[in-house]
Image (tube, rainbow, N blue to C red; front, side, top):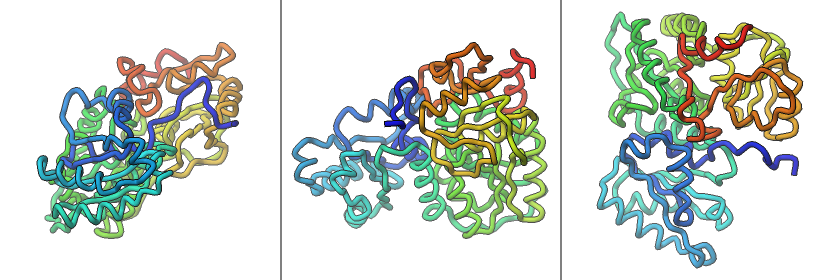
Length: 378
């Protein structure tokens, strides 16, 4: 019972991670679950839902289907929908109900692909893990099956892919545009943005890039696949505050020596400041702060933490750490765990609190980060 959340909430589930990573790419995305469950994703985890269409559907799993299985019904419905929509690809995955039923999504995907001729993929999800695990599977699938070999013409301008760009980590408040501007200011050419404002055709051309920039831990598996397939080195980090220049320098170095690089602060971390978040963003923020910062990561760890950091999904453990700190930077929902009057900087994370604080979503790139932390003196 120690992992039960009473005052804060779970992060967006693995199903939402797949949806978010593939939202704009023209695929038919089917969640095998009861009717109505899609509303959790649509209303809380996806800010693009009311602004752009996407072929994301629920299978409307019924009680008898759950008891008896009835995979034929699911296959028939998916094939019919595919014939109507002609998607670029089809993805199938399920909720805890489908997990308990033992639904073989890879087997079903094979049957659907044979009947439609459309590339079809089955993912292993349960709704019990965070968006990191779901998005990681989706990005790895794109890297393995859709990115095509390219002849890289020599150019003076360094070409990059931005991997792991979804609203779940970066919100929908200007961070994508700010990263685009940062890349332009440093004379980087963006081949593909995985996956905001990018088509599947652009992702297919990702092998043109000289360096992959991993801005979220959910894209590390894809970065490794692209390195293995095409020899593209990757740099991990987000251009937050003072890190913007360092990240650019790492990209230039990696483009020349083909070595992978990671942006993080080396050494023991004291808990003067406690920072809660996804590992890549949190470590970039710590480096930008240049202070004694302890990171707490409540999601799966897709990227290494440093000595002194904490990976925990136990609310009481997190509560104790927050109340022992001198300062906290976290999603506002973590204020519910504070027993003391400790300085607290609100940093809403869409994957944590969804739309609750959408009007407060900060632009963290470049000077935006300095603006966010300005109210408090370091």
